[in-house]
Length: 163
Image (tube, rainbow, N blue to C red; front, side):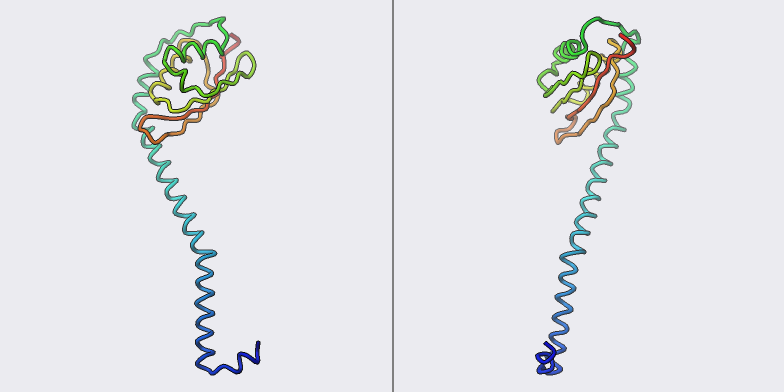
Protein backbone atom coordinates (compact mmCIF):
# COMPACT_ATOMS: atom_id res chain seq x y z
CA UNK A 1 0.00 0.00 0.00
CA UNK A 2 2.86 2.35 0.91
CA UNK A 3 4.58 1.61 -2.40
CA UNK A 4 1.35 2.35 -4.28
CA UNK A 5 1.01 5.65 -2.38
CA UNK A 6 4.55 6.68 -3.19
CA UNK A 7 3.97 6.08 -6.91
CA UNK A 8 1.34 8.82 -6.87
CA UNK A 9 2.20 12.41 -7.59
CA UNK A 10 1.73 14.98 -4.81
CA UNK A 11 -1.35 16.30 -6.62
CA UNK A 12 -2.88 12.78 -6.77
CA UNK A 13 -2.00 12.21 -3.11
CA UNK A 14 -3.77 15.44 -2.20
CA UNK A 15 -6.83 14.47 -4.27
CA UNK A 16 -6.95 11.00 -2.69
CA UNK A 17 -6.58 12.49 0.81
CA UNK A 18 -9.41 14.94 0.16
CA UNK A 19 -11.59 12.15 -1.28
CA UNK A 20 -10.90 9.94 1.75
CA UNK A 21 -11.75 12.82 4.10
CA UNK A 22 -14.95 13.55 2.18
CA UNK A 23 -15.89 9.85 2.29
CA UNK A 24 -15.20 9.74 6.03
CA UNK A 25 -17.38 12.82 6.62
CA UNK A 26 -20.15 11.34 4.47
CA UNK A 27 -20.05 8.07 6.44
CA UNK A 28 -20.12 9.97 9.73
CA UNK A 29 -23.15 11.86 8.49
CA UNK A 30 -24.95 8.69 7.38
CA UNK A 31 -24.08 6.57 10.39
CA UNK A 32 -24.18 9.11 13.22
CA UNK A 33 -25.63 12.51 12.47
CA UNK A 34 -28.63 11.54 10.33
CA UNK A 35 -30.00 8.87 12.77
CA UNK A 36 -29.46 11.26 15.67
CA UNK A 37 -31.21 14.06 13.81
CA UNK A 38 -34.13 11.79 12.91
CA UNK A 39 -34.47 10.63 16.52
CA UNK A 40 -34.51 14.23 17.73
CA UNK A 41 -37.21 15.09 15.16
CA UNK A 42 -39.33 12.10 16.21
CA UNK A 43 -39.07 13.13 19.85
CA UNK A 44 -39.99 16.70 18.91
CA UNK A 45 -43.10 15.44 17.10
CA UNK A 46 -43.98 13.20 20.06
CA UNK A 47 -43.70 16.13 22.46
CA UNK A 48 -45.86 18.23 20.14
CA UNK A 49 -48.48 15.48 20.01
CA UNK A 50 -48.42 15.03 23.78
CA UNK A 51 -48.73 18.79 24.24
CA UNK A 52 -51.77 18.81 21.95
CA UNK A 53 -53.31 15.99 24.02
CA UNK A 54 -52.63 17.89 27.23
CA UNK A 55 -54.18 21.06 25.80
CA UNK A 56 -57.23 19.07 24.68
CA UNK A 57 -57.61 17.58 28.15
CA UNK A 58 -57.21 20.97 29.81
CA UNK A 59 -59.81 22.46 27.46
CA UNK A 60 -62.26 19.70 28.45
CA UNK A 61 -61.57 19.93 32.19
CA UNK A 62 -64.64 22.13 32.92
CA UNK A 63 -66.87 19.57 31.20
CA UNK A 64 -65.31 16.73 33.20
CA UNK A 65 -65.77 18.65 36.44
CA UNK A 66 -69.36 19.50 35.50
CA UNK A 67 -70.12 15.87 34.78
CA UNK A 68 -68.45 14.61 37.93
CA UNK A 69 -70.43 17.10 40.03
CA UNK A 70 -73.76 16.42 38.34
CA UNK A 71 -74.01 12.75 39.31
CA UNK A 72 -75.89 11.46 42.29
CA UNK A 73 -73.77 11.50 45.41
CA UNK A 74 -75.47 8.43 46.85
CA UNK A 75 -73.88 5.16 45.93
CA UNK A 76 -76.20 2.25 45.72
CA UNK A 77 -74.86 -1.12 46.75
CA UNK A 78 -76.02 -3.84 44.43
CA UNK A 79 -75.82 -7.60 44.62
CA UNK A 80 -75.50 -7.64 40.84
CA UNK A 81 -72.23 -9.20 39.63
CA UNK A 82 -69.68 -6.61 38.51
CA UNK A 83 -69.37 -8.14 35.04
CA UNK A 84 -73.16 -8.09 34.63
CA UNK A 85 -73.39 -4.51 35.89
CA UNK A 86 -70.67 -3.32 33.50
CA UNK A 87 -72.30 -5.10 30.57
CA UNK A 88 -75.81 -3.82 31.40
CA UNK A 89 -74.76 -0.19 31.86
CA UNK A 90 -72.59 -0.31 28.72
CA UNK A 91 -75.62 -1.49 26.74
CA UNK A 92 -77.73 1.33 28.23
CA UNK A 93 -75.12 3.89 27.12
CA UNK A 94 -74.82 2.15 23.73
CA UNK A 95 -71.17 1.35 24.37
CA UNK A 96 -71.35 -2.43 24.12
CA UNK A 97 -70.15 -2.52 20.49
CA UNK A 98 -67.02 -0.52 21.38
CA UNK A 99 -66.01 -2.91 24.16
CA UNK A 100 -63.58 -5.21 22.40
CA UNK A 101 -62.65 -7.35 25.37
CA UNK A 102 -63.81 -7.89 28.94
CA UNK A 103 -61.63 -9.91 31.29
CA UNK A 104 -62.97 -10.69 34.76
CA UNK A 105 -60.29 -10.79 37.46
CA UNK A 106 -62.17 -12.41 40.31
CA UNK A 107 -65.59 -11.34 41.58
CA UNK A 108 -64.70 -7.72 42.32
CA UNK A 109 -62.45 -6.68 39.41
CA UNK A 110 -62.89 -6.50 35.65
CA UNK A 111 -60.52 -5.33 32.92
CA UNK A 112 -61.89 -3.73 29.72
CA UNK A 113 -60.54 -2.74 26.31
CA UNK A 114 -62.72 -0.15 24.60
CA UNK A 115 -62.03 1.13 21.08
CA UNK A 116 -63.31 4.05 19.00
CA UNK A 117 -65.56 5.47 21.72
CA UNK A 118 -66.64 9.08 22.14
CA UNK A 119 -64.67 10.56 25.04
CA UNK A 120 -67.73 12.30 26.50
CA UNK A 121 -69.78 9.10 26.40
CA UNK A 122 -67.00 7.14 28.09
CA UNK A 123 -66.73 9.73 30.87
CA UNK A 124 -70.49 9.80 31.42
CA UNK A 125 -70.57 6.00 31.65
CA UNK A 126 -67.64 5.89 34.08
CA UNK A 127 -69.28 8.66 36.11
CA UNK A 128 -72.46 6.62 36.33
CA UNK A 129 -70.54 3.53 37.44
CA UNK A 130 -68.69 5.42 40.16
CA UNK A 131 -71.49 7.71 41.38
CA UNK A 132 -74.49 5.42 41.19
CA UNK A 133 -72.99 1.96 41.64
CA UNK A 134 -69.93 2.53 43.83
CA UNK A 135 -67.51 1.15 41.25
CA UNK A 136 -63.93 2.40 41.51
CA UNK A 137 -61.61 3.01 38.57
CA UNK A 138 -58.36 1.28 39.48
CA UNK A 139 -56.50 1.92 36.21
CA UNK A 140 -57.43 4.07 33.21
CA UNK A 141 -55.34 4.52 30.05
CA UNK A 142 -56.82 6.67 27.29
CA UNK A 143 -55.32 7.05 23.80
CA UNK A 144 -56.58 9.81 21.53
CA UNK A 145 -57.55 8.72 18.02
CA UNK A 146 -57.50 10.61 14.72
CA UNK A 147 -61.19 11.53 14.84
CA UNK A 148 -61.77 14.47 17.21
CA UNK A 149 -63.31 13.38 20.51
CA UNK A 150 -62.75 9.66 19.84
CA UNK A 151 -60.50 7.57 22.08
CA UNK A 152 -59.39 4.04 22.87
CA UNK A 153 -59.32 3.09 26.54
CA UNK A 154 -57.97 0.30 28.70
CA UNK A 155 -59.30 0.24 32.22
CA UNK A 156 -59.63 -1.84 35.34
CA UNK A 157 -62.81 -1.43 37.40
CA UNK A 158 -63.27 -2.63 40.97
CA UNK A 159 -66.23 -2.92 43.24
CA UNK A 160 -65.49 -0.50 46.07
CA UNK A 161 -65.48 -1.29 49.76
CA UNK A 162 -66.61 -4.76 50.61
CA UNK A 163 -69.80 -4.79 48.56
